[in-house]
Length: 175
Image (cartoon, rainbow, N blue to C red):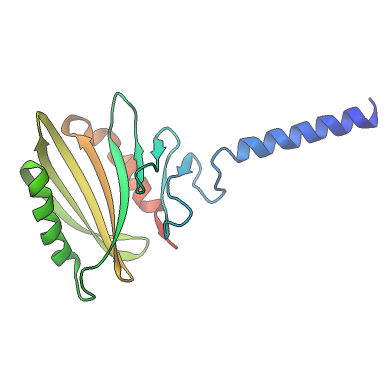
């Protein structure tokens, strides 16, 4: 085989390996996950590669499928005051939730951590139109901002993605 052919085969192999490894675009993403956060987000959020990432709204969003539109989103806001606690924020957030959804029923409130920061996870049922949802919101204060990761699913599908969402939360990092 000539030198040129050998070189072409080697280059083709290298390019193939690079393209396969670059499918995710982020070498820091956990195996089987893709980056769902934009470069300037201030955090890194990863979702399973089977989920569809959607950054068109300006927030970090991903959904499972058209047939099962379970979704996760990450939103960040400045705190209304420097002494705002998660409990203060939840009271305000719950009022906003009740203006959008009907029949809001908080199922659980759990202390947790998000990338080492104190966090709270709130799970509630709510209805909107003819649909019943179960929603999990994990909130953490980092600096002077509140980070909110929301998992929304039709109530019947909620359990199907709980493990995936728990993994997404475990891989979340602040910049």
